[in-house]
Amino acid sequence: MKQFEVNFDGLVGPTHNYAGLSYGNVASLNNASAVSSPKQAAKQGLKKMKALADLGMIQGVLAPQARPDVDALRRLGFSGSDADVLQQAAKQAPAIFQACCSASSMWTANAATVSPSADTADGKVHFTPANLTNKYHRSLEPQVTGNILKATFANSQYFSHHTHLPDNEHFGDEGAANHTRLCHEYGERGVELFVYGRYAFDKSKPAPVKYPARQTFEASQAIARLHGLSDDNVVYIQQNPDLIDQGVFHNDVISVGNQNVLFYHEQAFLDTDKALAEIKQKYGSGELHFIKVTSEQVSVQDAIKSYLFNTQVITLANGEMAIIAPTDCEENPAISAYLDELVTLNTPIKHIRYYDVKQSMRNGGGPACLRLRVAMNQTELAAVNQSTMMNDVQFERLNNWVDKHYRDRLSVDDLRDVALLNESRTALDELTQLLKLGSVYPFQKG
Image (tube, rainbow, N blue to C red; front, side):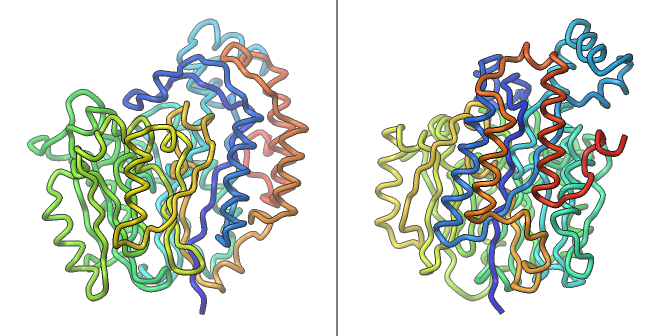
């Protein structure tokens, strides 16, 4: 039976904006309050999805969240009509208001942690939405994320959905941004790597000082238990606290893996030698490529600015691997020189392809942030909601939908306008019909 790793990219929402909400994410902070282009952002994302589908990859799409989140504002005491709520919140509590307008759900690497059926005790694909407790604006997402995942992977014979972990920073969980999987073939049992920033219940352990560690060891353990993973195919690795303090807020900013390749910066982990030895031991026989990038080759700051490691490493139909990189990597002389050399080395990575995702990059997320990876076999893939899969027809439909509903320019001040809220709801209601999701948004159930 054929096996696939399917990328489900997050569709950028109609209220895509730059509010600079993510403390610890340098790119997000640097572009706070800049004017955004929701239409351009959505089209850049769709173009990348279509490009991967044209390369022979199986590509899906995940719907965005509804923003502004009026329900969250009402929960915080703002009342009256929707227009009243928006105006009151924007005037009385602008920081809270902007948090409830966040565009961050576009980064579906933070949507959930996924374990394929080859790894789990019950032989199902398991999903746990991330609780994202470290940032208020992201902590608003898990319930709707779960709704969208259940509507996308709706067959309970093959897919198992868990409730997100408790809404408390002791179990801070950032999803696949701190999780990767190494394997011989996608359908064979693999080794799941959980990278965490700190121990929540043991303050004697190393932890960052300047910026928060968003993923806890205890959360990673809980996900592994929920997914029915064996200790024999799980490795827990602590992220280097010094790098978190330099702006490496997630592991996928400093390392990425695919099949038998782990591509990482030498400063990524706290105890690299120990982690790599455990991976080797649990991976078993077969060739394993640890591609280490030294600080001499690429500085940490260049890695963060270009998102060299927030690239997608994919396996092409001929078995060779390609890196899907943002054009920011191509425009950085040190990074492009490194990548030119990388494809000549004795590793499976033989191709570099650059894509323009600047609207996402400016908000603090590269190509890998935009996708959630789901390894599946043919039977499981056939059980997925097929309207969420990217093809020529759906690409055209979604582009037409964006043209119909999205604005070319959006400022933070526009978010208080109830007309934008109504435009967004109309658009998302139509999108759920296009993707055959049913009612996944609170406004659809009112």
